[in-house]
Every structure is written in structure tokens, then in C-alpha cells.
Length: 373
Image (cartoon, rainbow, N blue to C red):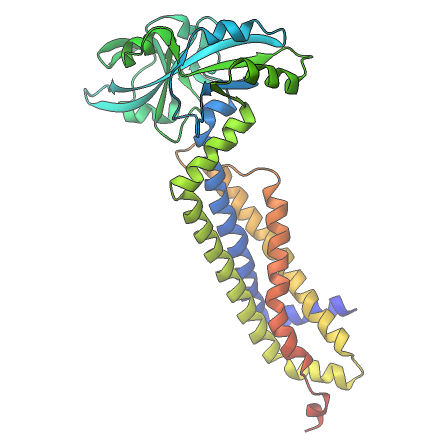
């Protein structure tokens, strides 16, 4: 009964209801959009680690992010392969270069050297070409969304990086990094381009046997290589993301903008609910005069907040889903984990209830005697 009264009051004062709905939609859509970009950037930060297919990364000591690793000796590879828990181990080499574009300009790129024939840590999804094409020493792969930087070269076209000839043999899908444009090449080619000393690598990727105890294997690797950082893929991913969040201002920037969006929504909801209650003060007084209790008035106001919050959350999530669908596969980094929408909906509903508390105080002050004045 009280929920029905709340719904009828909302329908009666449509302008105030629309204002409150706008506040809820603003919270869901703006906060959700900010979070989708943040999570999209987080994916860029650790994209190589997350898609490496490795259980463990062995890097230089005290590494803070995957883009700032020092070279490690190649003999570590033989030590690692001697452990019974290890199924495979593959080196990877990073470098920097200048790639000639189709219009004879140059673009700075991040080189990722893959060890043949495993090519571990390399392209995990392709738009064109085959991964096996990277077995060719002069082969290279770039991402589909980065092709415009290179003036849209055709598959199979020749170019050069740091003065070395390469052929575009594959086009990746979703291989974009935070620090720079990724180009996948054979490891020996990257060593030549970046002038890396022989027998040195940026990291060693390790995969465990299917039935191996990972904690035991990790302990043995760390005891075997005390001068290195031996991190699981998840640990290195989190460490890389945290580094960029705390050292580039991205975390503070997105935190500030998200807070502003929430405050705007709270202010809109509070003001519209308060104005609505002011207009209905006489209605609440009539309810009290007819025997309504203060508790009934409180339930009606809170029901209004729940109704407005529920409808606003639905509309906000619908608009957010439309935005994410429209930006999928575009230059805009956007990704929203499945756990975020329910969490965002719950927080928004809580904000709606908090915003209605100011209005509730005014509603409870309605004097039933004023009806007879």
C-alpha cells in the first residue's frame, strides 16, 4: 500500500521525478564511463604480461613494471629448464625503435622479440595473417588500430626499423600497450635492431607442468635465482598496473573525476527530492491527519528513492552498455569487468537513499494540524 502511494506521488509530480532520475542516470553513466576507460587503460598497461601464456616471469631484480626490466644472462634459461616442475621456458627481448611508415616518415615503436619456434609471449589474436609467419627472420606484426600511424601499409609490404628491413606479415587484434606501439618480431631481429649484447634477454617466461605444485615450483625458482625477480603473471601484472596508477597521475585523475560525478548525482538527487517533498508537505500532513504514522511517511519517501534509483540505474546501465558496444574495437580504451555493473548499481542505490534522507527530515515535520488551518 505505501509503495503504491509512493509510486502515485512520483507520477503526480513528473518534473521532480525526472530531475531525480537525471541524477541517478548521471551517477551510473558518468562513473561507469570513467571506470570503463580506467580498466581499459589498465589492460593496456599489462597487456603483454596478461596475454603471455606464462605461469611465471623471471626478470631483473627489484622490477617495478614490465616496461622497466634490465637484461638478464641467458644461462638462467638452462638452470630453469633443469627443474622437474618446468614444462617449458622461453626468453623474450624488448627494445625501442623507429619504424619507417608508408609515407616515408618515422614512428617510435616498442619492439617485442619472440624466441622461435615457440613464439611465446607473442600475438594472441590476429586480424590478418598467421602467427607462424613470424618464424621468418624479417617478419613483423603490428596491431590493426595502429596501422594508421604507419600510413596504412598493406599486408606483406616492406619497411624498415632502425635501418633493418622487415616485412609486415601479420596484423594483430587487441595488442596495444600503454607505453608505445607494439611491434612483434623474431628475437634475433630485435637483438640486431636494439644492439643488445649476445646471450642477454629482458625476461624468461616459464610454464609449469600441469600437475606441478606452483608454490613449490616458485620457491625452487626463487632459491635457484636469488639475484632475479621471480613473479607470477598475476603478480607482475598487478605490480605494473599499480606502478602506472601511482606514478603517472592516472589514478588521481580518474579518482577525482569519478568523485565529482558522484557528488553531482548526490546534489541533483538531494535537491530534487527536497523540492518534491516541499511541494507535497500538505499531502503528508493530510496523511498524518487521517491516521498515518511517521513511520508510514518515512517508508513512502524511501520507497520513492528506491523506485527512482531502480529506474535510473536501469537507464544508466542501458546507456553505458550502448556506449561500450559503440566503442568496442575503436581507439578508445574501454573495458568493464562483470563485477562492476552490480557493484555500481548497489552504490548508486545507496547514494539515492542517502540523498533522500534530507528530504525525509522535512517530510517528517509535516504538521497534521495545518490541514485544518
